[in-house]
Amino acid sequence: MVMNRERLAEMLLEVGALKFGDFVLSSGKRSDYYVDIKEACTHPKVLDALTDALLEVLPDGDVLAGPELGAVPLVSVLSVKAGLPMAIVRKRKKEYGTGERIVGDVRGRKVVLVDDVATTGGSLLEALEAIEEEGGEVRDAVVVVDRQEGAEEALKERGVRLSSVLTADDLRGLRDAESTARG
Amino acid sequence: MVMNRERLAEMLLEVGALKFGDFVLSSGKRSDYYVDIKEACTHPKVLDALTDALLEVLPDGDVLAGPELGAVPLVSVLSVKAGLPMAIVRKRKKEYGTGERIVGDVRGRKVVLVDDVATTGGSLLEALEAIEEEGGEVRDAVVVVDRQEGAEEALKERGVRLSSVLTADDLRGLRDAESTARG
Image (cartoon, one colour):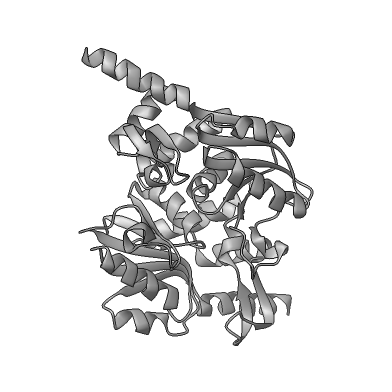
């Protein structure tokens, strides 16, 4: 069942995980929309629909890996749906040795990185480094929302292809369609 | 389908997430078994079986909440299977205000706490406090493994009933059955 992007974006609107207006992001930058996939994942129907959509765009790989915390609900449900093992990349913690930084086995495996939102690609690149340190190979990353703010280019430089369920353009397209409908 | 406990314990053994011998736990205490449910959850068949088993013992509630990190794969898959909203209780972080400490809505709701392992009940009690600070009510907690080292009593003192899929006795029962079978 191909989940259409518009319906997914509407679900995010309905649960208050997508808002349009004038926002200042945690990075300090301004944005005309706000999206919180972590919050969206706390609603079972949304988490179910988002992981079905991720399954449809999921590139080939041996194991799914997501950085703590936002990716963990997505990668867990996706792992069961896809029947693929998963791994969790913990945030950089002084007391962790590299070995303990990753829950799960990535050594010698083709790893698909999964995350909720890609902005500049910073957290994906950090997870990529931790996985490569542990002997894993990353050729693909997949996210729910690509904010189209540099992640694709940054990952391309490291030989990683970024796919997404929704882009910033998709979200703005929905906003414009809704405002035209309201006339 | 009632998943029998022995088969679940065998699955944990098969993926190396359950071991018998002489171990020193992170707490410094000695133990005749070692169990790592975080590691077990990285195997899709095990995560699927554990969440089916949790579903069978799941007490009544409005929302499922689990402490970061070990509970998050369990509570995410369980949320989709049970069709119940979920919440994640972040570890105590100085920079988090209480409001940001919990991802998801627990205010005015009957919350079932979910975790991977209960030992003394410490992390469950910490999560309980964060949820109560946010206006949630906790009457039940459910874990995959109850190590039977004080958690049940500690939670009872706070009016919370602890249920589990497996207990330390179950795990030792499997060990003894296997060694008898080997003759």
